[in-house]
Length: 348
Image (cartoon, rainbow, N blue to C red):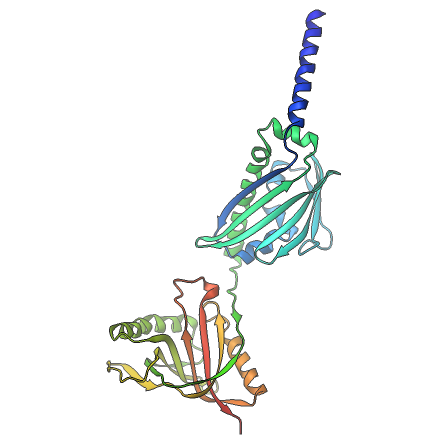
């Protein structure tokens, strides 16, 4: 009996000591994991901000196959939510704040305990998008603290699940992008009016059709733009690479243009076989800046200029040119800048 008393006393001491140890652990916690994914931020954001997508990569559903998710009418956007019931209890999540394609804040609740905060942060990096997934709380319940304390802390207890979730998400995103490649996006600046004078255009003449494929246009620019650039560098010219269109007829499907350089001077330029040297258009112009990959958003940009000219009673004189304001190898695709100019005059 004495031995039993000692054993019980020892157990009591251990329990009390354990309870004291748990009670002294911090009430707050933060768990964070990050992963770089080769996908646009918009694609990742659209996935994690809609809870209907979570079953495909949720790490806890792999661990507990008894989990049953329930979805309300709204599962995406601010106010979107879902709930679940599994062997470890019930829980729910809700989107409470977001900045599209950049950040997302969610409220996570287990049973009747105080909610925790879950955040997502998306940062564009050279390799793709850095995704940072974080959970933090200020009032960790005693039982959760006990589990965490004897598991090495919340980071060791939850961190591996977060890492696994990001790994699963990366695979799901990659598979979805193979099936449905994301469409390139663009944005347009405001249209401005101005005057232009005192410039020359040097370029290699091209004749093609208005419905030429983007691949063919890319081949032409890949062949002739480096030649024009070499000419500019050899003669130490102050220039901006571009293309000048002298004909674009949708009825006859005929297109004529030059691939080359807008030279910012009127000094006489040295001749080069195959290169045409001409005075750039002078007088009134309208201009719009397009940001995005080459060939994406061009129709919308020209449409916006046409709408502007109609509103302001302007007509084109027949000359249109584009200037490529930055190096596509040095900026992100979304920041590639193409300035589109129309030479115009007042409508009669």
